[in-house]
Length: 243
Picture 1 (cartoon, rainbow, N blue to C red):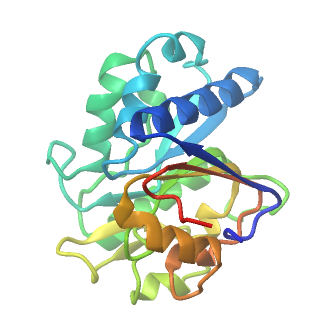
Picture 2 (cartoon, rainbow, N blue to C red):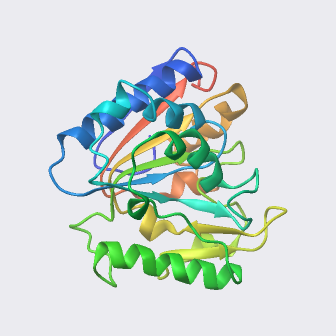
């Protein structure tokens, strides 16, 4: 079984290109069918880059209600946005530099000050959008959340062995250990508050982690998610565990 959620489904694509098209169609349909403002939380890493490129091109770009969609990030490396390792920088180059998204609707994780002050500042960005200091189980923070999965079972920057895995009060926290650079990540409470969540998983090096996450192996951070809404796995054949 995957991380706990109301409903879960698996879409197996032939390769990363097909996976990206499936996810782009899914995102576009949900956003186009909405009537109010619509919040999408993006993932970093290499897997979603092609998805973001597709969303910035026809036909997906022409169907998205850009004026109503707000864009957030699940995590960020504590580097400037023009650094090649920046999640914001990757998404900007792949998507926002080519799409009509209003600048006011793009909510990147600023990396000024210290990791802790940056985390606190982004938490305030989320609370301002949500218009509450407390997450309501009946009202999701995000409409769509995109997540990745590392070979070690991490998602966002919820990294094995780090103290952030126990954080249940803050919405955003700094991650000082576990990687060469500090990171800023949404915590479990914020990540779990989404109407629709999608994991994008590609490559044979993810197969073991995907299998263990689907079996809810609690040693893996991704398996500990308890999602409020539905979950869709978009995986390629190389990553999909054999029956």
